[in-house]
Amino acid sequence: MTKKTVIIGTVGTGDPHFVAALFLGRILSDAGFKVVNLGCSCSTEEFIKAAIETKADAILMSSLLGYAESDLRGYRDMLVEAGLDGIVSYIGGNLAIGARTPEEAKKNFQELGFTRV
Image 1: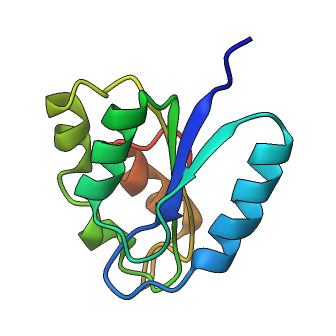
Image 2 (image 1 turned 90 degrees about the vertical axis):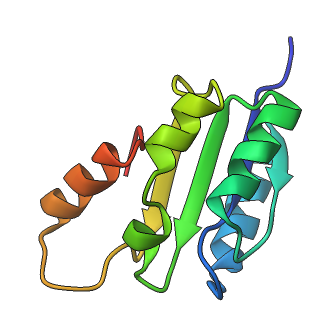
């Protein structure tokens, strides 16, 4: 059986949320996934390039600083342009600064192109 490939890392300039990515990478690797860890402070373009190069099955992003929504503007369009519009795409962490409910944040990130928030 072929291992599923997942791309993991933190999105956004200066985001140090790499510890969560390390834990997640280890868990996924132990579960039989091929994990490509991009590390911290990655651009959206880096995630998409890695997904194309590795023929990844999923992109898993993490963010801690609360700027993910602005960091990820245009993400859905980039996925479509790269031919990745069907890829599983998850994001987690402290995603947004400001007064909004978790439901509002979830809706916003789904509109940005994420399968699960």
